[in-house]
Length: 320
Image (tube, rainbow, N blue to C red; front, side):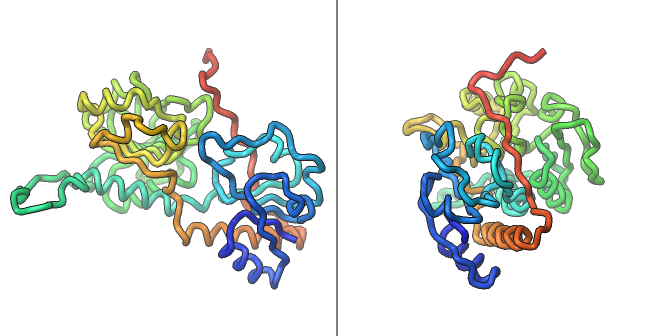
């Protein structure tokens, strides 16, 4: 039996791929009898600011559960205790293509100054020069599946790519230069994409100090976690010309409160955490869920085993 928060389309796909499995819809949260009675839990979290899960599991947890499949790649939306029971699998490795497309769309829009370039009348008929994406420098902070996919696509477009990863291990991709850290990366980029996990080590990696070292006119794209950016530093950098544009799919908190100045700045472009959203991506997650359930029944290894990402504190600890 499968308890699902994934929705009707997912439930139908999983049931069909597993030959009519008993899939039962459950509401958000954890304290539902159908979850405790199920063998598999297909879990969709509420990521909005203010959604708080219990500090401890509900009574009887995890019941009969043998597998928890997450719909997301990241695991920081979930309570620690969720990872202390049956195996947890995620969508890791599946979100690279849609998120890379989002990043490239943002880069094309910035390069061609969209939407400002679109005319509303003949009085706006003014030819404007635009730089080329080919030959421009893309910086990628974080080189997991998202960073690697984006790098491949950017290289195909003729961009020059530099990346930073969380370890000193080689990037392992021809044509991608490796920088040691953010200061070494940010000073040479036309576009900078943040694609690293949100941890204490990455909290506010973009702040006033980092932006002071940026190449003037930098376009910043955040598809990682809102905690990577000190939002108070963005508008001064935009007004000074250090940043030419900011594209944020994630913020801290989510959503930003009404009246926040980032909503009204003409060169800030906000989207509601949808970089990976799309039916093709979701279908791959549903297929992974069905595959993992089949593997569980056969006793085979599971795909995308997940661990709890470190929590992010409001104030990072002192670094020695």
